[in-house]
Length: 397
Image (cartoon, rainbow, N blue to C red; front, side, top):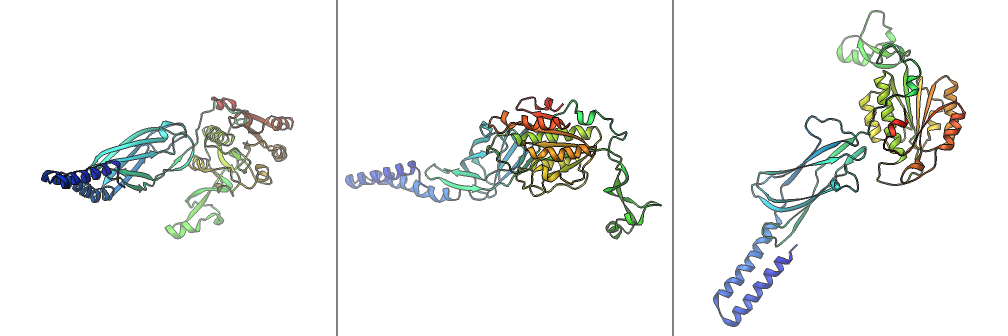
């Protein structure tokens, strides 16, 4: 696309030509031809200014593996010219989905005065990770006025970058659900007699033939036996409500559902430090739930990706399900139907903690959790209400 500078030079060329035609002065023709020649030469050079350019983006500093909401990290963007002809005058805007919507880090405008052939330029900027989730960077829109600013060439450059941000995890000082009864003597899940397989191990004399893992036998040529979790080992079931309630549509991370996810991560962190096995209970239609005991990394990956898109409410999910000795039911929406299934768990001598997120206290508003909290408390179920606050972790203790 020609710029105003190109139109100005073309107009000047025409004026000098007319003056030369009227006065028959030779140098006026030369100036006219020179100006027009610059415009004509700049066009093909500008057409190839953005060709053979590739990009690469790296999120996180060297050695940084896990990225958590609220952390500060660096992003490195590299543009490389893969031909021997250099270019320059490149303008672009780096749109970072990891930053807050209203943050200046959201859009970083860059200018590259010169990009040498077979060379590269590199930009590094810091960003505070705003919200958990799987984030995809948009394409880069490049524009160049090389070589003389007479024409502008544009191009969309895809630099595929997907980044998984874990939810914020705050350490809890205590949690009555797990502290009011003595924990198991063993600090982590151990092998024993049960129904949930922890893994496999070499066959030992006395192992039941029914527990042989025939796939491993076929692969290794040696007898391999399944190893089961010790059912005497207490565990914690995290029950998370993923039903698609009418939440307010917003880009803010300060919503009742986002706080439900963060509180689930913090409770799980406290439980694993106390040596309790972790299990998840949620609607599979929203996101497939890991079966059996879940370790820390898969749990974080699940909590980073999950969204309130389920078709079954938590009361429907809990009904008839086998849970661990301890259950933390986390509800981002005050569903009165939750009382009956939680009370049923309580009657089965399962220790239950109901964590209610009071959406009425959040900036975007919502229903209050007070009535549900009163019903659960009257039924003898331990309740924690999380209201919008900077120190939300203390409300769980």
